[in-house]
Amino acid sequence: MLGGRWMLVGVMMAVPFSGTSVRAQSQAASGGERPWWRPSVIYEVYPRSFADSNNDGIGDLNGIASKLDYLESLGVDAIWITPCYPSPQKDFGYDVSDYTNIDPMYGTLADFDHLVAAARQHHIRVLMDFVVNHTSDQHPWFLASRSSRNSPYRDWYIWRDGKGPGQPPNNWISDFGGPAWTWDAKTQQWYYHYFEAAQPDLNWRNPAVQKAMFNVARFWYDRGVAGFRLDAVDTLYEDPNLHDNPIVNGQMVNKYNDNLAENHVILRRLRSLSNQYDAVLLGETWTDNISQLKQYYGDHDDEIQLPMDFMFATVNTLSASKFRHQIDMIESSGEWPTFVITNHDMERSYNRYGDGVHNDQIAKLMAALYLTLRGTAVMYYGEEIGMSNNDPKRLQDVLDPLGRMDWPKNKGRDGERTPMQWNDTFNAGFTKGKPWLPIPASYKTHNVATELQEPNSILNFYKALLRMRRDDPAIASGDYVDVAPDDANVICFLRRYQDHSVLVALNLSGERQRLNVDLSSDGVGTGKVTTLLTTMKHGPRKLRGAELDPFAVWIVRVGQRGGQADATAGQNPGR
Ligand code: GLC
Image (cartoon, rainbow, N blue to C red; front, side, top):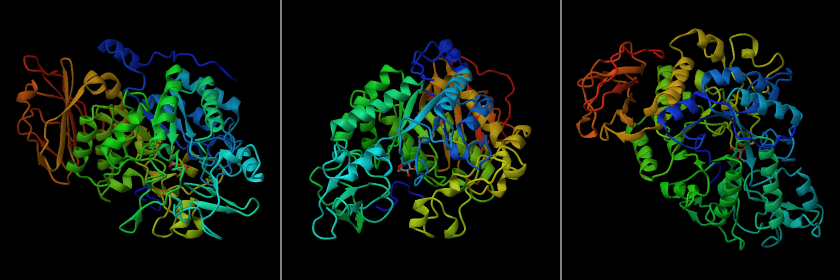
């Protein structure tokens, strides 16, 4: 399955987080005790592309620190920084050559400590990206491992004899194309790599590897990180007998090198370590069905707290019934959902869901969908300003190894990793140097400075939604009730917490739609309602007969039966 994971396309002791956020206050107000990561918003920062403080064209940690005011005012609770460890950058940081340091291009450990401390002042936690499956082929462990068959590090990686001369040990295929095995002429054996040849897989069956990797986790926890995004967790273990994978309909099924039961043993141990630090694990959990996703939570809620739901993220079409199906799946699993619509491996949602005409409206619609559902939300930088993909036009411009492998069928991931658009000046305010990737022309209109001035911008809509997630008890803590299960065009659900009820109505179609909801069995009155947030000029005053404009978002407070909806006129900060 080539590229199958991406369907498109100073030492301080950990101290309890002390900032009293608005969220903490609203939790207290609602009386709920819940872990800090519920229902937080985690913002993914791709450090190469966020903000460049030294004008070398590549973002850095001091750049991120300089944008903390922005992130706080946006309303995110945590940032997840994709790998910023020393790395040859063959896979832009996902090839780590030292797990306990910072790549000089991003700064120093002191800069990192400063960032964590400054983020804390802004009530923002910091998550690191833990590349658990593989290292760089330049990591000292691998250099030692390949130096000789007798090296004490030999068994830290997966070395095998081939089936015969020039033949790898089995038929496994790398996710980056070609065999998952590379021949080492010096030691006359093959080593295994699920991804690029420059990313050899660690041998998690070796207790020394486990010990070293758990020490890495402790190192960062002790520096104050609030958790990890676990990279490629499904690929940790391989079948020790190296059985060939089956081929079904011409496609390899990764039966023997993906999703092995042993993965879960390590996840339980990582979870137990995270519990000691009140930290969270966010999983890169690609799954085919809900039962696989459910397994990542652990049978006793003892594995990953936040396994990302990529089945939701890859619906890839503006279909009310397809999204509803995914929401129903995770809701009926009884688990806490983690919603995401895009990331550094997927085409931006602006392009994927946009129809080329109403993209700004659709960007708000998508934002309202994943940010008002029950669950944790993971946002990718730039989504809040409607950033679009800027795919390379020529093979010679492609930097991402995936793009070079399969050009032009797959243009790779450069397009979704372009610099953050801060303003409409030179290089979108990202750098005074030459940006490492070209900035899309859309920066003239879609940038932070311009959108802050524009009341109805995508950015102000995101800010209003994030404020609502913090301040509205029903959105923050309510349950989820689908009230239009058969509507082909509109997703409409209630969020209910004690005597607060909020109805979210989303028109996923390009036509006006009449809302057909009956709340009589939900204990909610259907009379007058109060619009909390809408993209329409005027929110309807009543539920009965309400109509939604094309791609409209309408979020309203509804009265509990016997109670009354707030009579204040609704606001419209995101039209
Ligand atoms: C994860 C990362 C991706 C990377 C791969 C190999 O899927 O998200 O960017 O290429 O792991 O490390």
